[in-house]
Structure formats: C-alpha cells, structure tokens
Length: 133
Image (tube, rainbow, N blue to C red; front, side):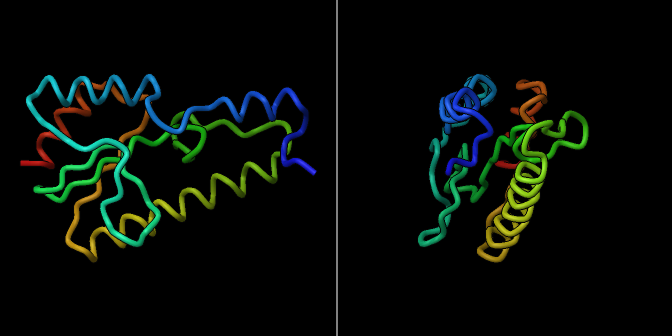
C-alpha cells in the first residue's frame, strides 16, 4: 500500500527533485558570484548519511537549504489537508533530524548554516560568506 493518498499525488511527490531545485540553483549562483567555491550535495561527515547542499571543506561550513513545507518553516509551512497525520509526522521527523545533524556537525567541529528556500538568495549568500570567513 502506498503512502500517497492517490496515484496523482504519488506521481507529483515522486517528481520532486532531491537537488538542483530553483532555490538551490539561485543560492549557488549568488554564492559563486561572491567568489566562493564549494562542493555540491556532499556529506561533511564520513559514515553519517546527511548531505549538505553546499559544503566548504576548508572552512568546515555545511549549508543546508531547507524547503518551507518539508522542514516546517514557521513563516510559510502549510498543513497538509490530505493524510495530515502522516505529513505532520514527516515534518516533525525532518526537524528532529535537522537538529541532530546540526549537533553532530558541531561535535565534529563544523558549522552548520540553515537557509529557508524563501530567503533572498543574495542576502543568504552574504550570510554564507560571513560563515565561511
């Protein structure tokens, strides 16, 4: 039995991209324009299945671009009308994993930077530059 409420929903959700989304490409472009170079979609810690959207290995900074729906943005998150309990638990689990990721990175001497998908890419890029410096 599928978790999706209908075949159309399943098709739609499966078509969501894991990387190279419009907000991610805009952030990468803005960060690159500031002269910073980075790894894309990389794991900062070996043996830990957590992937940063941008990774600055020398500076030990991991940047995560979080989607408003998937990570429960306090400003833009909407509650799913169908399968509400499933999606509420999914977002709650994502947020718990985000906190765990940040803690693991901090323990290993990394700085974790979280950016919401709705943030202005130029402003977010400046925050990334400050973190890297």
